[in-house]
Length: 394
Image (cartoon, rainbow, N blue to C red; front, side, top):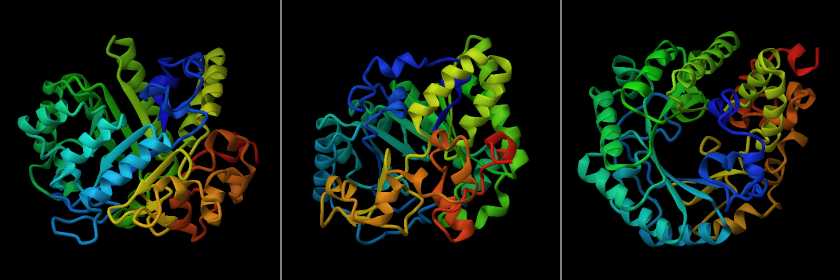
């Protein structure tokens, strides 16, 4: 996760995370990426069912009943273990998490344990009543997926009216007093809508947006040809920086982040070296604190059936199941060779990644993409758009 507003626009200084000792339990949410202990943010796919049919869905969800999902009591046990382990945030995801009948009970249990709770949703099921319930539970944040403006979003989600439903859900959350933001997965189909998304941030008074790079997992595996090429990636990330700066200069600062490609941090640093060398060195210290990709280290995933994964995309690599052992025990058991390597990926990556001068900043980038293209979990991430000259291996 690369904070464009934090780094490029100076919304965070290197002294900010240091003030909290860089401990996950003490850091405000916007500084968690700079934690030193890297207690994992856990994504729990509480259920696989979804009322939409998104073309890039990593869980390949549909509007149907699925068997084998964790029961309410098993979910409560999981949350209790996560809280005792010191997990800083639990992210309730799906499928569409609001289709799970006991979701409010589970969120309430998480909050009662002191866990910061976040909801990742398509927004279409959040009417005014649901928004009030979510506010009562004191959610930290609701992230609403929006992959373009009306025509593009509806085609991406394959359900007419998905755009209006998402916007209505977002407005209901905002009116209930819940912090809300957008989640946008970048690809060739929707990159032209990015300026419109920034306009939406202004007109709908949305404080935050995360731009996700495409990961080739689930139904997203069929979209490799629709991913941005290296030139398009550079241009798009540069556009995000420019649009974010315009908001700050206009006195309307927003939190803008990119996710799932840590080459973005290096590109941002190289750009600042030309524009503001002093700030560039400040940013480099923050990027080193960030440490790059944190799958299997600073982020983990629990599937609907209790399986534990390094992240929500590497679903075929399982370290154990919370029905058999607590998450805390699975996460700290380094007898699994993949888990052991995930804790320090930069010692195991190959190819360009292994020789990169920014490896300590990027952390080897995204393993799911590397495996999807090369068949090798530790090969170079094909989505790295930096040149050999830029990374010092020419």
